[in-house]
Length: 525
Image (cartoon, rainbow, N blue to C red; front, side, top):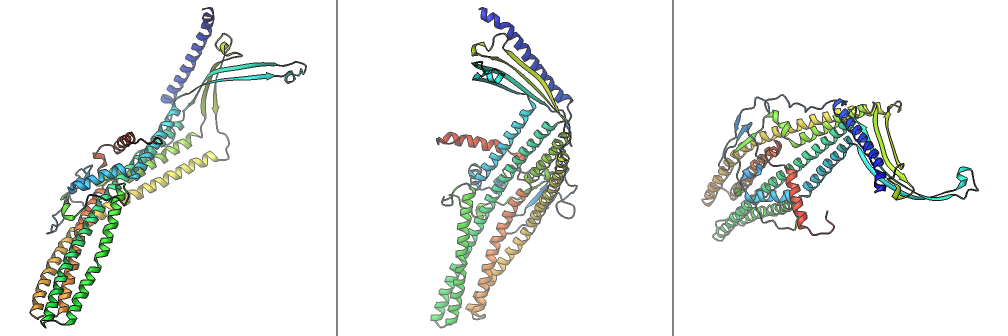
C-alpha cells in the first residue's frame, strides 16, 4: 500500500502531462481544420459541350429507322434513361446468363477490382496523416561503463541495466493544405480506378454481346450455305439426268459441278470462324477454350430492341466511364498543383514525448523516473536550387496535359455516338435494300431455271443466277447481324447505364468473399 501511495504523485503528473499533450494535439487539429487554408485551385468538373445533337443539324426528339421484312423499325428516344442491364433488351436468357458468368469469372474485372481496392486503401493511408501519430516504445539494455570514458582509467567501471518506456506523439500542422491536397489527389485516383472498373465491365459485356451476335451471324451463313449446297447438288443430279436423256452436255455437268465445289469451299472458312468465335466467347466468360459452352446463338433467338434510349448530349460526359476516368485524372493533377504550391511555405510540426527510465524494470514508475519533452519545429524552404519552383511548374504542365487528354476523350465519345447513330440509320436502309436484292435474286433464279428447262437460256445464265442468289442471301444475314451489333454499340457508346444499377465493386466484392469461403486452399488470402 505504501508503494502504491508513493506512485500516486507520479501517476498524477503523468496524467496531467498526457492531458496537456492531448489538448495540444486537439488544438492543433482544430486550428488546422478551421483556420488552415488550402493552396492551389479548387477543382470543378468541366462543363459539357454546348451542343444540341451528335450529328450535323438539330437533333430530333425521335428518329425512326426503316423497317423491312427481316427486321422491325427502331426508334431513338432522346433523353430516355438507359437500363443498367441493357443486354436484357435482346431477350436472350442464355446471353444474360453468359454475361453474369463473365462478370463473376473474368480476370480482367478481378484485376480492375484489385486496383480499385488498392487505390481506396492508399487513400485511407494518406487520410491518417491528418491525425497525430502516437507510438509506444520500450527498451531494455545491459551496459558496462569504463572509467577511461571519463578520464579515470583506474576506475574499475560498473555494470548496469537501463530500461526505458515512453510514449511519443508527433503531429504535422497542415496549415497550407499540403496533406489535404494529397488526400484529394488519392481520392481522385480511387475515383479513376472506379470508372476503370466500370469501363472494363462495359467493354466485357459489349464484347460478349457482339461475339454472340457474330456467332449467330456465322451460324446463319453456314445454314444458308448448306441450303445452297443442297440446292446445287439437286441441280447437279438434274443436269446429269438431262445428260443421260441427251438434253444437256458434258460441259453443263462440269460447270454445275464446278459451281457446287466453289460453294463448298466457302463452308470451311465459315466453320473455322465459328470455332474461333466460340473460343473467344469462352475466354470472355473466364473459362479455358477447351470448355464447352451450352449456349448457342442464332439470329432468330435474338430480339432486336425497337425503342433505343439516346442520352442528351449534355449528359454524355457524365455517363461515359472513360470520360469520368479522365476527369478523375484531371482532378488528381489539379490537387498536385496545390501540393507543390504548399511546399513553398513553412511546415509546422509538434512533437511530444513522455516516459520513464530506470535501472530496474520494477522502478520504471516510481517518483523521479519520469522523463518528458515537448517542442515544435518550423521548416521554411529557403534555397533548393529552384527545385520547388520547377516542381510546381511541372505540376501545372501535367494539369494542362490532363486537360487536353480530357478534351480528346470527350471528342472521341461524341465521335463514337455519332458513328453509331449513322450506322443504325444506314443499317436499316441497307437491310431493306438487301431484302429486295434477295427477293429479286430468288425470283430471277426461279425464272432462269424455268427458262433453262425450256431451252430459252444457256446453262451459264442459270449458274450466274444461282451465284447471285447465294451472295444476296449471305449479304442479308450480314445486314441483319450488323443491326444487332450496332445496337449493342450504341449502348456502349452511351455509357452502358452503370448509374442505373447497383454498385459494381460491391457486387464483385460480395462474389469474391463467397468464392473465398468455398476455397479451402491454405495459401488463399
